Image (cartoon, rainbow over all chains, first blue to last red; front, side, top):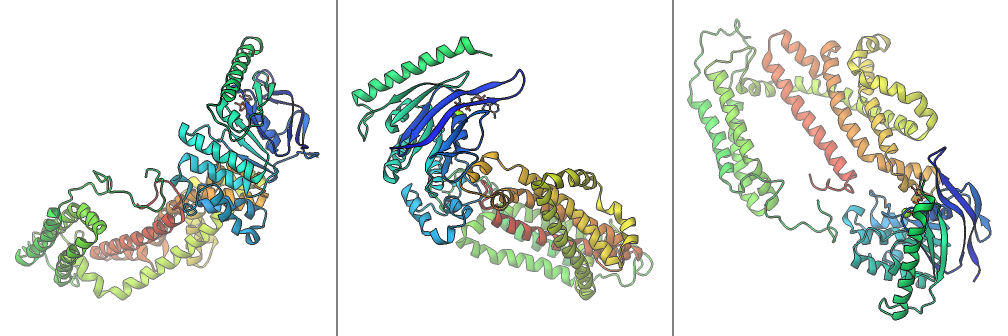
Length: 258
Length: 348
Ligand SMILES: Nc1ncnc2c1ncn2[C@@H]1O[C@H](COP(=O)(O)OP(=O)(O)O)[C@@H](O)[C@H]1O
Ligand SMILES: [Mg+2]
């Protein structure tokens, strides 16, 4: 394993003058190739900010980020991104949405066949010609994931992709995401507020605290796969992380309020 | 429409149909057919009670009074509706639609009868200002060729103006919506000129541009250009940021963002713009033709009025209504096809 993403002492401050928010304060993180890393923490602790910095959709005031030693300077198809609400093109069918990356890179004609492959991979065969408004939330997120994966990104960044789904669909999609990760041997960074989701999927879990956004602790999950949610080790880890989050939440409130 | 989990599947028929909510029985439909027959009977049976009106004095001597066309029309309507009925029996969608519209058709037939009786029978509404349906419908076929040349003249101007205006509107809309410099310089001008009715420019345009058809076309271009570019620009600027961002993470270049994200996102607005522009162009066309043209339906109305031939004015209005309705239906058809991805726009 080698370092794929390196985040070095990154600081991101929003706003000007009195009204500033320190979304990230000197945050450092390394993600290995092939790793599944989750970012977890209370709302406002800078998870999305960190993910957007890695994607190149935003840039830090201090510190630097690199992908395989190369400085990250803007968005690129080697870092796929899945938004909270899917952000599908409403005017494009499922197939056209998924084909977008190929078209944008000008390789659609040569690689047309892969669209069907990825539709199958996320279990949407038969829905090729459906429009986003005809899809359920879970299906829409699967389209968003396939759309990002068709470019074979070096890392897939996911910002609470299951946040808006019902419990049943969420678990189904979590399993599917885990399968995709193993099958494609890709690297994934997932933002979540669901502890079970983080434990079920991750190699490492990054716990963050707000005001200012920092990394409180990084936990090695170290459980075998596939993981059972009723396994005693799973439950013990769950209790530990919840405790950690609870402490983080309390510690942050009085001391750093602006 | 609620989001269907399976695509391309018709909705099961709901308990109460929100679209065809009128009575589902055929009673009103039968009454509508009877109403057309009654209107026909009224025209045939009720004698005309002319209260001392003189042809040539109270109305022109060529005033068309032959009721044949009117009677054929009423009979044809009754027959048409009656023939549709057995067909509708096999086509449930058609039946629902027909039965839903039945009350309106019924009222329409009655209105025709009342209009006919008030004009041609009782002369409570008198010629030349208030011709009856008989007079208008008697006139149209006798002068069809003349009318066609006016329709053609209007259509030519309208199509030229709309096509040029739409193209210009889309191009400027894209420039303004995409490039800051263009927005800075053009948008305020657009906003200002957009509120001025195109006809206000007429005195200037007719002097500045010759010959007259060029001036008229230019007026129509003005009428559609601003609305369409405004809507195009707005549609592009309403693109959610997330769509641009996700496209960039998929490898999109600037031009890909423009042509595959911003412009598709503006499509619904463009169609709103085109619909508005169509109405405004039509308004401008008729007004301009009435003020200074030698052909076209607007000119024809003005000219008919000068000779007190109001039945011609009504005929022109009816023709305008028909042509414009077809045009709007056509635009709707294209729109529904182009925007079939929009929620709730399926089948309207
Ligand atoms: N574009 C922005 N402008 C101003 N403040 C922002 C912006 N984005 C995020 N913030 C602030 O930065 C902090 C971290 O936000 P975010 O990264 O979205 O947190 P999380 O995803 O963990 O909920 C929050 O306090 C938020 O209000
Ligand atoms: Mg967030």
